[in-house]
Image (cartoon, rainbow, N blue to C red):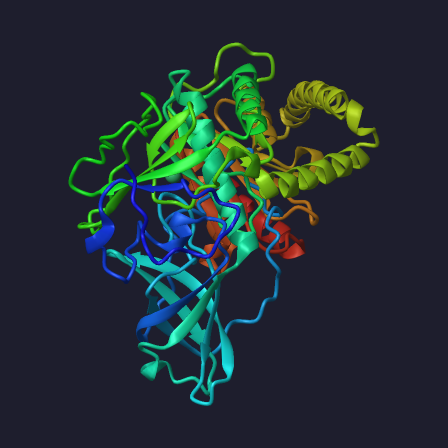
Length: 512
Ligand SMILES: [Zn+2]
């Protein structure tokens, strides 16, 4: 049997059997612990009349949302421009207070779901109502602690607020984004788990990010696998499967001992936080699909999710072997975030098409062609540079002197690869001598220096002398080194007449 927890919450569209309490709550204190908060018993409730139980000044140290905004370098889902956050928002002023309420619709973060924000309404001594921003809400032990911003000069004295009536209102767009994504994650994890792909972790950026959340799986997926998972999720969403929460006392291992369980589909049991003791255990159920320990706010049925899209994985299109056999993130979007994310993706697709002057439908083919051409041209340029390097070396092969200098000022050959190719070919013809190659292009600093000889000691001596001459009084100007007869350095700053003359002078000394 299940029990009611009085007082009843204001009615919403959430079914009465959403939150099923499997123990006699007679001994449950009036101040609701995390696990039994109004937001966890009715996820559609947006506002609640409650009472202040405690209020104290908060430390100003910024809170870190628990590791959720991390971005994986090079992931397909990360993008600098995908946040819809308003830029230039004013920094809030005023003192931060920590407020605990008897009950609240503002969810403290947990289970991977970021905290809610919202508004706290209280009255001043004259009975006038004032609204304060709830900037965050965190769980401390069994308590939900609201971080409330109180502007300077407010007529509400938070130090005397204990026992006062208060209204908590949740920032609904933010909650809906987090909640729908969290329910979608349970659904996707359950579908993948049934295919032998357990979820190792999951994460989402907080509202208003439109970055794709992820589930981390033991390996990468093929496109076909990802698409199959997406289709299965969307079939369940279309069915509008019912979601409900079983609440049991902590200490009896979370078991529900009656017939109301979702069947034998329990997926995993995530650890309860160490500082959460004496509370309850919540199992989130999706009819016939999933049963999983969870403390988040979950949609009462899957129709709230609307749509789920699994982003194509990093495995090449049409490949039937996943390219990764180690833990890999699979990105997805659902609900309102899916709409914003896909709108952004669509616009980016159009921009990319415009950048290469082709319609969106032909974009992939065009880009593949451009890439093939680019590769062919790069290979051609490499071959030509190799041939040019040999010609340049041949032309300098007859230059007299034990130390021969060669200067270049061509952007196309302003790189150490080219200079090395010239030096290598030259040294093959002049095994007893040393070549000093410099390259300077005003538009592409720094200048380059390469010294090479088959006489390794001689190469080092020449390099050290040239380096000192070019550096002058600014030792940090020339950086580089080498070994076994080949030395390379970059020369910062302008390359002009002074540098050419300094080089000329030191070479004359070396030849003497
Ligand atoms: Zn969860």
